[in-house]
Length: 441
Image (cartoon, rainbow, N blue to C red; front, side):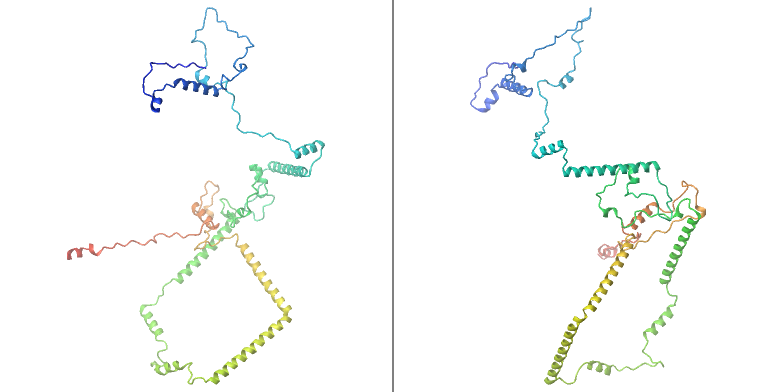
């Protein structure tokens, strides 16, 4: 234990009748040092007073050999190499025990089931669950070896080559879902938990450029592309001419238009000789007013007779309806045939609708006020073709091409950009600010 180094000075004579004076004038430094020393002992292995002699003292078994200094030379205290103080602070204190992990592992106690399982394994008896697991593990191992052999074969054969613009189907090329090429290149397998509707796109992601649109096409492909572009240009010109004819103004003079208007408005007012027709409106109006009106009121006997006749007609019609319902019992076969024909017709319409829907699945839909209009065919003339890809210049803007591609794939709605449609602002001068109003005032 460390000795207290408190200096006891002359005793102060102060009144200690209050706790405030006790805290201010009481000297408790020795008590604080004792408590601090006790806390240090508890941190560094426990209190020394409670330890046994075995923990406090030990016997050195090896003798301490002191190094003899060289003759004629004696090292000074400053020359003796000592570890730095910063390094000494990092050394572990032997009095402090190492900190253990806070996680507590409960000791495993074997229950009856585990003991029976170990005994069965020791005797060589395999249960049904373990047997099934071993079989599934063997199947997975076999499948893994087969996939690995296929990947090695594909790597040895190299990448498969085929014509991009060939008319027929591509043979001997594995699809991305098969895992052959994908596994060979990326060494990974596709995620199987992805939902099917996410992988299905209503419109193809990329549209194949015609064979004549490449930088070095064959003569036939290039001529076919020019023919398609020519047909498209002719159809566009016909459409523009039709619109011009529809919106064309008439070439009739103003005087001729006035005479035509007078003839149309005066049609039926004159006879063939040119005399004006005299129409008596008085008699005509009288005849029109008397239409649907009777001269005499019906008597009570007439009304009763009409009611009896109506009642008899209703009774006869009801009897006819009952007879029709009774006879329908004997028409069950005909009714079944009619129902069958109707169901067949409905199924035909349904299959037709599904076929149309399936055909339109890979087409662009109208998702806005404007319809999608495909971009015109881009082509180069024979004299504009170049021999290398480095000298090739695109005909269409890349940004517009991507924008049209998004419209085709229903990612954005087709839009028509108009400029200059914003009306000009009008400047209005208030009446109170006019010059005339100021002069009047």
